[in-house]
Image (cartoon, rainbow, N blue to C red; front, side, top):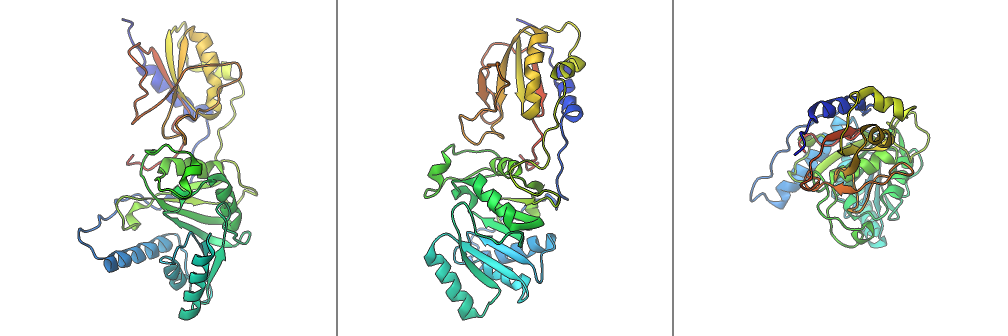
Length: 348
């Protein structure tokens, strides 16, 4: 049995993340606390009061108040809409968006009956909430994202509707990684929970900066709450505001941390983005075979794999609850290359 001497290599390769790759840039983290557990037997009215208090605490944390503009995307019958209306006041605006005419008509009727002129019901589309460009301080989605069939189109439309510096807040389930691996097309009319890791990846790749996950302001125990921000200095959506930094010479980079004369018959790579350019020169230098470990935190479909450099082919293994299931054959070295650049809830 071959001796496995991988500890120093893991450390060295991990340091490469900071040296050759970009650093994570996020907005000020509004805090990561523990949500208060819901009491057993709590009444619907009590839950509603707690939800209202949580929404107000969230808005206060983000300094969203009188005169602001909020988009309640997937407003339903308006449970949060009317709370938003209280907070922004008569001088503010709440776009209560829904994708069915009946719900929009119901929101219009209630807004008229209650004399809440700042609520403006909007008939949106599944991939576009129809917000005026650069108009909104905060877009809010509560248990909506897991139904979205075209997340990237929707995220870009929301990005354009936000003011520079505006916030996107997504409350949904489940914490951690995907548990229900289904095609996005199936999500529209059926109920499959999403994962916070999926939301983080998609939002960042479509132009949002990760801002935080302030669990301490939300009243429910199970859902995740994620806050993103439209960068102030970016003109268009569609790309990560904190991209991987290019590696000018993958061969030089690989030589810089590989021990002289290293030979590893079987090497595992946990690599993303530009760092995948290092796989080929590492394998060439160590004269061995490689396996590609795909993180379930990254994948949004069970068969999704990050692209390999041209001319390179490796067997790929998707982790399951953190286990890549590589089989009994020994691994001689493991390289983590830009693998943990994304921000997820620290509890996971």
